[in-house]
Image (tube, rainbow over all chains, first blue to last red; front, side, top):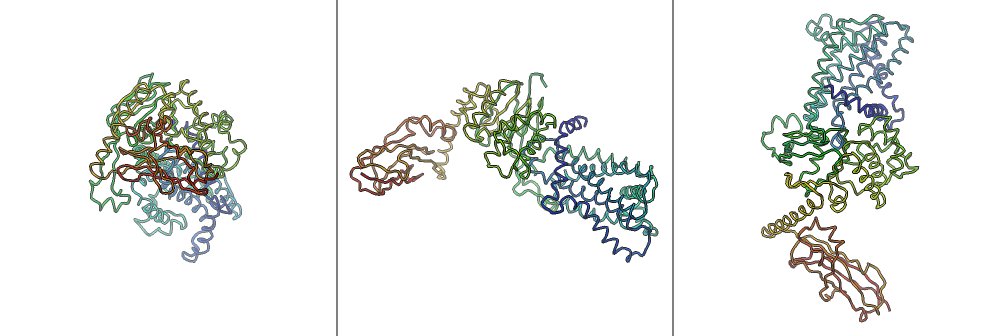
Length: 260
Length: 374
């Protein structure tokens, strides 16, 4: 494990250029370019903002801010898990030709996602100020929450991308699970909608992303500190998944060049 | 691992599973019966030490496992059993320009490509002038790579790879980069590396050139390590074995009736569309190679067969084909020649045809149009 980290450190320039390519290369050829990575969630926000109050009635104040503080972290999760699952397969060409620590491809996915997310946070802040919610000291917790989310994502995509090489169905299974996850996480609805749902509510509360969403909303919208106990539990879970991820990836990567 | 070794291979075997139709989806994995995979052992129980500073060439016929061995050394592939360990920073030139991005400039791609080789920004910056100078791209270095000719592309890729400060350099059959001038330069660079502390492992079929470049040759034969030693000796033994194998294979194919004779005929003189004077004798010269026994060269002028040509020794042609046609060709008889009297011909266009025949089959033929005048 220590050897792996040393090697990744030696290849840091590769990590850096891959992140740059991930961020710049994604929207290459489109007129608005990188702006799309911010525009996309924003447009989604407006769609939900227009439709949802009719479905649920006016259940929460500041629904616009509630939406945006949920959708942007969710987009971070969604795009990196989707992109990360395909990361090894999409780089088959170079994997067959050159040796480098393959983990770099996934670390760069998470890093570029994280950078995109932090830039998007500026947009959230603009909305917060515009809507009169304002900002507070609790924003200091934001990097911590984001880091926990990044660790969780890295662990997940280490496993998913390695298995994807052997079983290509995984991509579609992941797509479906993510779709379910969207509704199993309070992204567009408040938790109290499910207050009478019993088991379903328990499940949603057990979802680590629910804890993260609550923490984000605390930072931006409600000006409260995260529930440190819950966040610590999520961090622990993420670290366990990360360890398993490195182990599984290390095992499976030996045959990448043959299987791809 | 011993201190003096750069690469240590111990009891290493590698097999590939050859699936007739590889199951790629879950449904296929579940529904398809197992046991359709055929194990194909490419390398069998190899043990080999390569010392620091050595320049080693791996030789062997196609499919002998040379490239697989290189890939195992760079950790693109992993052995089925046994171990491969390396000591030092390893760079492999298995494929030139891996990781090039067509829309970025040559200079930016130097950064990308060198990063793939594990260099840091500082190391790249200290070397970038050297790389650009070596590539001889001049002002093109700031143009996007997609505007490059394939020669320029290869030159840039090679310049990066060879200027990466590696302890171990693995090169797979890529010595034929660019024009003669650039090739010479690459060779000089490789000689420089040979005389330095760098360990170099080359896979090559240009036997003549590696014979002088390398300090040691390792011959892989059907996945075994056949011979290991001084290049000149190993290469000559390898050629001897290839000659035997080629002959045996030809015999086998011949007896089973599936033999496909192949060969080439080439006419050095006259060239097509040349103007020739009636008064001078036309000296037809050329060479032919054929993998069958008893091949004959026939020369036809305007559909009329001429006399049997005589043999001419051609060392130069023999050098080129001696591996491919090992045991089938002799340097003394590879060339042919015939002096043709043109004085009885009418003025105007005539067709001269050279035909290579073997066992009453035409293997290859070349037509040459000539203009005859006074």
